[in-house]
Image 1 (cartoon, helix red, strand yellow):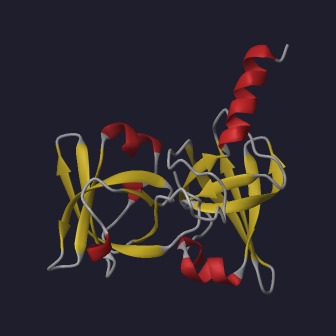
Image 2: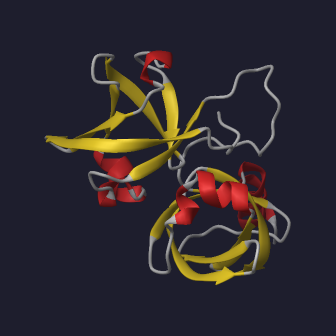
Length: 197
């Protein structure tokens, strides 16, 4: 379980394919704080640490075929910087919202507006899910508040700190992102589909 508050960005150094799986190796000065079998959110996708090399300050995670098909991991390139967040502890403050690290679908950034001190990012998606204005959503693992909401689209506003310390500083129209919809909203939507008539 995560909060959607990005702690750090790591540099993708190596991509290795093994049958249908893909291993991603990242560089970070935080490597010494990680451990094998630890769950870490990478652009909103919960992945398990499978190897650590303290000498090179790198660690490795593995993605299976299903993860590659449902997320943006298959589009990652060597040299990319990826948002990470370690799992929350029971006594932590919940500064964002409850994020599971289970990506629901991929979305597309359709527009970026410079609001002279903040930025408004617009996204579209094709999924049986919903957003609500002032509700929560995780975009590449970042907990955000929905500004505008419509079927298949939404927008969020980004403050300078978030812009500078996450993937948003490089995000452009046409880029793919990982989306995780609010877990409470998902349960409500499923309930209404089955019992709302």
